[in-house]
Length: 260
Image (cartoon, rainbow, N blue to C red; front, side):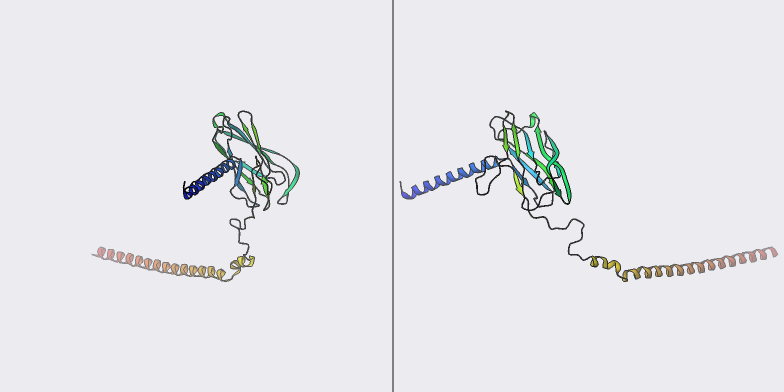
């Protein structure tokens, strides 16, 4: 075999092996239950999507339970309906009261459990997405960990609750998590920009020029009304004079006729 041909075949084999390993790694990663946040900004609200693949070749996934944090509790949690699945949010006492936005919070949503009917369980080579709307998110840089428990129809229970350690390989069953980012800096809808000066906002109301304009307009309107009134009166008098003249002429004509 020529050296050039040998090198070509060796390179092709190495590329194929590398691609296979990458594909296997991607498949393993995608098989994990994980969560995505559409807006992790601190102090705001976010939609969380849990992607749950079925890893069993024979059983189906029939239940998913997500545990919510207690040190940085989410005081607002709502569920997006999934066909064939029922969801239950459990609210309970916190281990330790937490202050959020100046208020002391002693209770918060603690778990969310989705349970499937027989026709909508997640089968082999299938996955399902479960969504939550949550808030208020904790300060920037906080890792929000949401351990999940996946239950199969054969009784198998898989706990996705292992924390990934920096510098260490990913654990076999990592807990779904995301990290909050810096708070949004845009002003709230309808609010004045932070740079606007109160004096500048109030200035148009304090200006004397707009106040003078309505008085001028009112004066013009009043003069027009007076002129129109005098014109109407003159027209009425003229009409009255014409009527009197016509009446006098009629009487004169009748008198002449009688005399004849």
